[in-house]
Length: 331
Image (cartoon, rainbow, N blue to C red):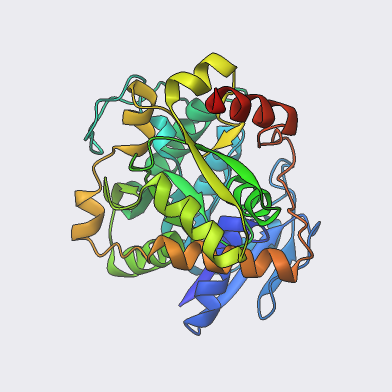
């Protein structure tokens, strides 16, 4: 299998590359060469924002192209059109963010989506940019296009910092604000399981959109944080705080308390999606404990440094705000 990954040096793209190499596929990446290549990959350089950015890969035929682009849809549009006659299939890593808010709990792939355009030259709105990318790939490849719509992606090499922040905070020990309730469900997917589904699906001829996360209720916030305590060997004490107390303290869900949002419309959208179609097509999700353990091992090997993606805001709860929440909970 001859695989071309557009990008391939960070998080999800890297997971796709590593999985392709593990399978013995011939894997090539096209990127700007700003980060070290994955061992075993053939790397060629090009800037897809430039008119000749794809030149290095247009003289070959490809069984599969995987594209992780998250910015201007027109870049995806140019890539898909240029490769339509040279590639068998095209898989685009989109997002469950494409669904139009509010999204009902249990929504499947046929839920209403945001407006997007493949001609859009801007990327200010992440959801619209991803939807525009979907339309670009579908227009160029038709029923040869696979649209992966993952939810919250975790795992080694995470470049957002959500799970790494929890691991590093818990590793420091002491009293830790744990946003409750502990049994609140969270839907996640390990980047490696996302990569496996995309490569399996494309090889099997899957087409169309697939929600990709663990099933609703399979993972809880309590399981994630308790596993962080266990794998770090920390003496951290989790203090479960109600959503009401967190709101009163002014702590921001999702960003200051990574992964977590309180019960309500946003939680329904992020953590209560229907993944039946993907499960029936072969999606397999490893236990979240394995994801937490492997992410901690990666962090330790990297000296605790988290390579946050350019343009991403920092995540995590400031120490003074955490202390204030803990004081309030003790009263």
